[in-house]
Length: 210
Image (cartoon, rainbow, N blue to C red; front, side):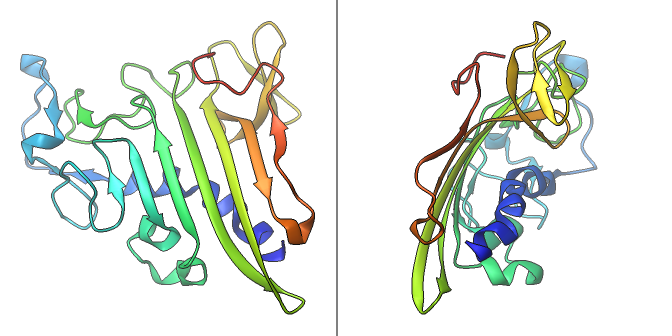
């Protein structure tokens, strides 16, 4: 449990930080004039390591076309030195088009986020993180897994004492990253006495509500 608690929140940040590493060519003209979108298939979009973003999985485990990451934790950060303590922990992330699109329609040659919205609020964006690993404690190997659903807060929602509420005062869930709410968490760690559902939004854990 000690190891899990030491980086559980960091793991939950994986998508938000790691996908912010997606960059695009800066010498391309804007496509806004003809109202078209640049797709991954065009070969014009680049990742942070200057590799061309393509369909299917890249060497790190990102499938930007399929809105999916499947790999080890450090792979999400291009095997950065600082995350080596977590290199054996596994991570799967899934997201929808509002969270991070697989095309660029606003002319900046970046994969679009909350397209046509000024922020994630009201965009309908969502993300799931599925994580698992193991750690040693009292001469035994403890295996854990964790699953979380995160959604963008809807229009008119407000935060009160760290909790997002709808404009009709229905509780959504704990605030995270400012514009988002946790609507479901499942945590299993027998060594820590944790089994199953640990939190669920009172308005329900399903997507598409906001």
